[in-house]
Structures are given as structure tokens and as C-alpha cells.
Image (tube, rainbow, N blue to C red):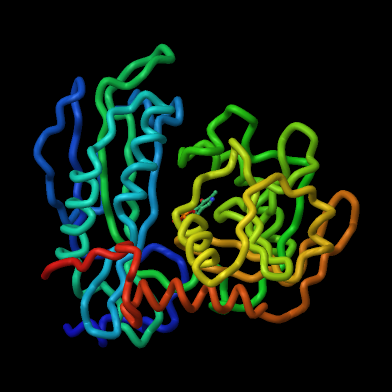
Length: 341
Ligand code: PLP
Ligand code: COI
């Protein structure tokens, strides 16, 4: 079946769709075995594997784009590989090298070519690499065996409506990450701690939770599934914090903003400063750039209203990023890698 008939690509949201192949590779006592390619979506595991009871799980998210020229490009896979290495260090798991990570991701794309959405759809193939501690043990200690898995799913926008404003809440009742905790690495536990507040926000009709720092609840940190940035005048402002995930998208936007002539500030952002910003947005691989319409502070009932519009800076940053990802423009930064097929 041709890729154009496989599914309604333009209607895709951010949900799991099975693809043809996924990869698994296991490290035992620090030595990696062969990569196993499988069409099964399941795996068997020991009931006492460390990932099941002590949360020994880290993951990544990156995308492959079918470009305007028909070529398929992976976006900054090396950055995701490096972040997986730092997440793995935090959980004492053996991590794949940058080269292993990137090669396996590229091969997952190659083996699932018919699931890379057509250019016109504006969708992409999302890759989900994960690393889990798989040997059985009972006491709390590092895993001696880690299993690296990479699977793919075609996806559309994370927040419904593409680049349309989303409303979010501040929930001072629940924290995502403690200072010197695991907020700056991509461990499953961070998403566990934000699950209830995120679910409650969704149930009330909001797209995501904007978390504040866990000490004073005074400074903006990030969303449950994306970083935060704001624009004031010609300045791009994003939180500096040791408990925020270093987002590849945010890093890229900071570079694009600088090259557009904007000033970039990475600093603490008191929550009240929201009322002084012209634009605010969520950014990430899944979210891309999602402009904020309203921020509702649940406990103080204060509402920060950015209007039901997409601000000009957010739009320009979104377009410039996607032009590179979809090959509509030169990639002067070397961020994209064409997957040879
Ligand atoms: N922050 C959190 C908590 C995330 O889950 C994500 C998604 O990966 C991001 C930020 C954005 O990071 P990136 O741009 O590397 O996808
Ligand atoms: C991503 O943007 O890749 C994420 O991991 C966000 C979310 C789906 C957890």
C-alpha cells in the first residue's frame, strides 16, 4: 500500500500507531549485544526487573520529517543521544553511545519508511527511544542489565489545532521536580509526578500544567511536556533552572532567535512577570511551538491573558524551525541528517 493511502495523515494527533519494525539491544555488565529487529510490539520481562519497581526508565523523543524535496530528515538526533547519556548516568544505567543511538534511530526510520507521513500532511514520524533496567533484583541498587528500545509512530500535533493558542494552568498544589532532583533529565519518574496534576488540568479543559519552582513557588519552570519561553519586545526569555529539562527545541529556538536579531535571556522568571510579556509559548519536539492563550493560576485565581492569537515572534520561530525540519530552506546549522534510503 502506498504511503498516501495508509492512513488519514492530516487527521493524526499525538497518539500511538503501530509501525512495522522496532529495535532492541541489551547491555550486560556494560557490554552491548547485537541489535534485534522485531515486528512484535511486545516484550517479556522478569517480574523483578528494576524498571518495574524502582522506576529505572529513561526515554527520548525525536522526529523524522519527509521534506518538500522528498528526502527524510532526522532532527538533531545527536542531541537526544547526549541527553539520554546524561539521563542514564543519573539512574546508573549503561547508555548507548551517540553513534549507536543515531544509527539505530536512522535504521528504525528506514525500516518504517511507509509510515513517514507525506510532506503535505504536516505530520512526522516520532521516534521513541527508551532505556530500561531489565535484570531481576530486589534491593535498591543499580541495574546490571539495560535494554535500549527504539520504536516509531506517525504523529500529528501534540496540542490539538496545530499552531493555535492553548490555555494552561499553574498548579501550586503539586510539584514536578525538586532542586537537585531529576527534573533536568528525561526519566519516567518526572512524568509520574506530574501525572495527576496534568490529568486534573485536562479534565478541566486545559492543555497542560505550567510548573513553578518547588522551593518558593515563585519562578516559572516548565510545562509537564514542554519548555516555556516568552517574548517581550525583541527579547526571547526562557527559565534558567537546574530542574528543567534541557530542551533540544528550546536550544534551537534560542539560536534562531539570536540569528533573527533578538536578545536571548536565560534567567529566573518570577510568575508575575507573565503580565509583562507580549507572547508566551510551550516548546518541545512533540509540542513544536504552541502559543499560550491564557495562563490560569488555580490557587490565586489570577488569569494572564495573551489573547486568542498567535504572536508574530512565536509564528516566525515556528515557521523558521519547521522550514529547516521540512527542508524548505537551507540548514545552516547542520541540525538535520538526511536518512539515506
Ligand atoms: N520538557 C519536558 C518536560 C518534556 O517532556 C519535553 C519533551 O521532550 C521538553 C521539555 C522538550 O524537549 P525537546 O525539545 O528536547 O523535545
Ligand atoms: C517530546 O516532546 O518528545 C516529549 O517527550 C513530550 C511528551 C510526549 C512526553
